[in-house]
Structure formats: C-alpha cells, structure tokens
Image (cartoon, rainbow, N blue to C red):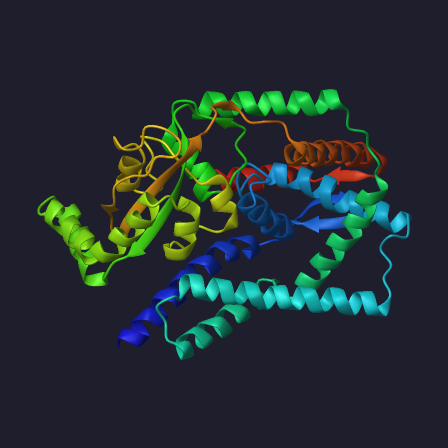
Length: 391
C-alpha cells in the first residue's frame, strides 16, 4: 500500500503538470505571428514562455508578449542570420557529437526530475515513474529529437555570436561595476541574512561586504550521533541545552586536550588543523579565505557565530575555547578582519562585466537585425491569449 501510495503521489504531481501543459493544446492552435514566412503557433509560444519564465528570461511564464519578443530576437533572428552566413552547416561527425551530447543531457534531466519528485520511491517505482515521465514529455513534444535540435541551435548561435565583434570600454566596465556595487550596498548593508543567503546559499557574486565580518578557520570533531541528536532535541525544547552541550564536549575531551597542547607548544594552527579537523568544507579555498562570520550570522549556526565573537577572539591569531553544536566540537582560529565596503574590481569581475556588456551589445545587434525581417502579428490571437492568462 505504501509503495502504491508513493508512486500515486508522484503520478498526481505529473498529472498536474500535464494539466498545465494541456492548456497549451486545448481547442484551436492559432498562428500568433509569422516570422519571415514561418508560422509560429500558440502552442509553441506557450511552451517556450514556460521555459523562458523558469529561466527568468521574461517576467513570468505567462508573459506571452515578452516571450514572443524574446523568441524573435534570441532564436528566430539568429537562426535566419546564421543560415544566411552558412553557419548552420555541420559535418556528419559534428552532428553525431551534438546528438550524443543532447541525448545524454536529456537522460540526465529525466534522472534529476525523478530523483527530485520521487526521492522516497523504491528503485522499481522510480523506473516506472521515469517511463511515465518520458511518455509525458514525448506527448508534450519534449523529445530527445527536440533536445538535439535545441543543442544544434545553441551551437549555431554560438558560432554567430563569435562573428559579432563588439568593443567594451573601461568606462563602460567602471559604470556597470559602480551601478551594481551601489545596488548591492543599498540592499545588503543592513541585511546580513540576505547577504549570506545570496553569497553562501546561492553563490551569487555580491560586490559589497557589510561591516563587521571576520574570517575564521576551524577544527571540527564530529561527535556521536546519539549525543548530537540529544543536543538538537534540547535546543528545540529549550531544556537541558547546557547539559547536552557538555556531554558532547566531554566525549571529545581527550582529543581537544591534545589539540590545545600542540597549540600551547607553539605549533601553527593550520598544521594542527590539517592533522585533526573533520570538516569537509575546510578545503584549500577555505583555508585561504576562511569562513566569513558576522555576529548576526545564521548560515553557519548560532553557536559558530557566538564562538567566532567570544571573549577569547579579540584579534587575529586568537583561538576560541571548544564549543559544541549539532555537529560536534568546534575550535576556531581568528584569521583576519574582512574589509567592509565595495570589493576590489579585480580581473575576475572585470571579465564577468565584459562578458555581460558584450552579451547586451550583441542582443542589441540582434534586435536591430530583426528589423530586416518580415514579422506579421496576429494581434487578435495574441490579445486573446494574454486575456486568458490573466483570468
């Protein structure tokens, strides 16, 4: 019964998705516009709008007017111009490579979707769900062949973009940097929670650092699961937290005593850390930069922030007392203070901005080229679709 229920739940979710997609194919499928003699149907616009919306290329997956504009500039114009320049031709070997890569990607997406929606299914149930999903995708036109066509188009467009030489000036780079850094300062200066969400969870490139951050290294000693579970239970209830924390510390007393003995004898913290830490995140990059911690930090846990700003941690080079968390025992090293304000406009950021400006200028060129092609809009059908999407 449980197996059937789990599979049923996934299929219900699949049915909901099918219901959304079916909206695209209900009733008539009118031509929404014609580009250079090619008719573009409503179903195609709806399908692409969903993809554009998910990728945040347009404001929403029902912004069909935006989807039409995006499709013309970013797909139809590049296809037409590339064909005129002969950039859409491939050898048999190149096509075989493209098709193989696209097929692999298609299967990977199937696997990822099944794992995401059917994480609690057995292997046999996952396989059944995978075949149901494949059948649904095929029915909706999301086939391996469609993936291969998309992959081929991406190669063609990449070829075209390489021919679109644009100039990026230092003044333009400085302007983009100043504008984005100011936006980051306005948004993150007094919002540590948001700053850590974007920098640590989303791995976004933020060009402003709020005041009050310091960098620390850590030795982490994992504790017995029963002890850490008891600690988490104590924290959730607010009862017996100190006792649970002490039990974790006691369980690692011998190891921590040995660590502090080495530090007291003058050994470098990094050398001791490399010998003893069980922190998988303390890789080469983290050893160089450390963990950025603020008194209001939440990303590393409240115990970690408290330890990083404890009374023992007054200046670079200081070492904290051992403290407990839901992971085990931590010993922190005050590496340095992190300068606040705008980050340095280094080569990495300069390259990122150059790529951004280059892309924007190429889009402007594509939009200008669009004027060279005949586009006939079926405004009545577009208006009807837009009206339906707002109901």
